[in-house]
Image (cartoon, rainbow, N blue to C red):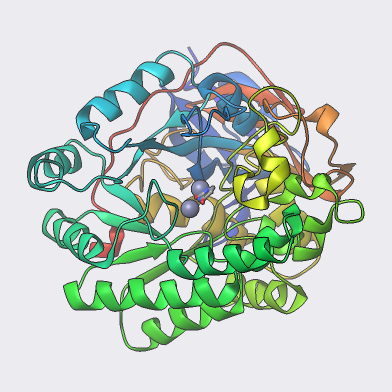
Length: 468
Ligand code: DUC
Ligand code: ZN
Ligand code: ZN
């Protein structure tokens, strides 16, 4: 009889702290040994490969209904297949409350959608859009105790925005229940004002989305969220930070000892506002419409600095996929009349890790350890999954990604597994790709393709380490 069900042999184990050559012995879906010369019933030869903790994408949108008839391009099956092929073993999608809806009913809805469909593990963040006394007093506390230990709030969008009083109420519940609040920080009124002015001038092409969602509006809302969090004394995460101005607010807060965490995403290092021009200011720019929008080269440089120096804790995809063509897509008749109707969001769950590895590690901008911290270990710590997830250690789930650091390939829509009909990163050359993804010791993807039937489950989470 073998000691282990599976041994991953001869690779270089990489964690957020170090790298070393070792075999990994897996038993019952967990890491049972890290040593030399292990023997198991099965063996994977990882010579020449890096062995990383599986990617944890802490910000993805799957199968969310929209108010205007656009349809998300990924459900839980296609979205998690795509995630697995891109080297991820856990994703954190949103269970988004529709105004008037019970939060518990909302969560049950999303569980129904995810049930039996997931190729990776999943765990829901909640989105609070209707903070009624019933939601704040009963449903939310009960759900936090059930392991939904994080939720998102929006400072913009007509059907999602919370006013300052509501934000403060929600922050208070988070503090009491020790839940982590994720904040979409863009100032609603400033965006509406800029949108009206641009439309008055006939500036309606997708390119102007980037001007309406000005970085000043993001900076202002970031500071307001920080101030509210300071008043309540609650930790928060500013999600999808796009550039230098909001970053400075986060650094300002941190310098004063506030627990303000930050996330950035591939679009803020790999795209700029110029991409929204499309082909000569045409509708092609809609392929890059997301919020906050990509900024300029100066902001890209600031984001890289923040990825290096720890301003950013986590690097997530904000995968929010809408097809470019066809019914329910970005290219709908209303969206042709103004950028303000173009669905906000771009796909990226499959390309998040390759883009950060190639632009970061391969180009010498960040270390391998930082790569692992940003994409796996820190999301696990921040969202209450550590040490079951996000680490290579005895007893941890055997969620591992085997990575070829020298494999060179270009990002092509034809090679991706998501439900979208385009990628905003088409043609981008990448050095360093995942070649095998294992969830609890079972291969769920190999060479850019999903493998096998859905094996993922839903994870209930601990209190965020932001409270420790
Ligand atoms: N916020 C997100 O987190 N994702 C897509 C669009 C948005 O506004
Ligand atoms: Zn958002
Ligand atoms: Zn998002």
